[in-house]
Image (cartoon, rainbow, N blue to C red; front, side, top):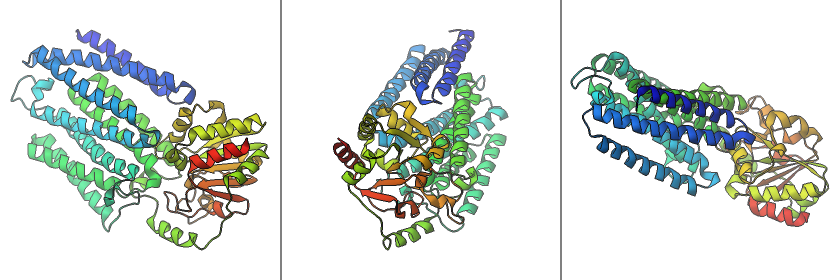
Length: 479
């Protein structure tokens, strides 16, 4: 395969990736975007496989042997990915995304180690024993360091998202200790210093010491971040994985890896900015720690002494049946109960009665960006009924009923109270509706650890129980 043909195919794959990002920016074009992404990746993988066979011969290996290694890796990796994607539940999608980010980071580390050990095999140098050019050392240092941080940080994020591990580092609450930020600063400076030492001397000890510190930094960066900030963490790690791939791409002189990594890195950075804006928090504010643990303690102490108005699913169905406009606010509790299909059925029953039904989506609802959009899309909820926060907030004041299913922080009026840890965070203004119905399993606080004043309003009815069962009971009562 000629290098001109390789360049042309990489260009076609790059165009497909750009079209994929464009398609994924809206639910109505997301299927087409996914298709472009799959086509682009197929072209890139097959082209790279052919290129590796060519380079194997240049490095003194047999083409058949080189191709065998490539095919074995494709079968194992592709098979594992397909198996996990097929079996993963929608509620576990954030954990799968975090796992994939960790694998990208680890792959960048392995490639960097291999390139440092055998630079001639990657055509970084012409012959064995030649020193690696300083520019390539810098690229390998950056790619390996970012990859190591991405790997260990993603492992911690996976544990926090899963919520099923008892190890403290994997708990949703922030893990903080005295001198934490100073320790991170010292480790960061040491990592940079060791990386520059490797760049100047090509010293293996400095390279591996740098990698070890980067792995530790990945853990320390993520553990102080609480569950409320997990959507930002997911998009941030997505960006890190892209820059790690791009850094390695420069070292390997692989244009496809540079372009793909840059697209992932830049899109992840933009998404992180959007998520931070949706929470009224700066990126550095998120990195320096999660929503406060002190607030959680105070909130849990006050909840037991306050009364709420509770009702049954039949009561809620009666209120919904007599409304003219209903706004449904889905949250992570809805995802956990896998109640999206029941919600769609409830909306259909209400629509048959001439009631206008809309869905309100907060950018950071759930545990990853777009989690609720994906959830509703799985249930084939019509796109024209789904509205983003900025488009629906003005309609809550005219809505007869706002029904909140498993959401908490994203509808908490505490965001309007100065001094609150979430002060200034844009929320879905469900409290403006004439009647509010809230479905939760209990009065437990959300990820931010804050009590929600919305639950105690006179116009609010709490319906406790599993979201799927409660909504199914509502459907029966509406009939």
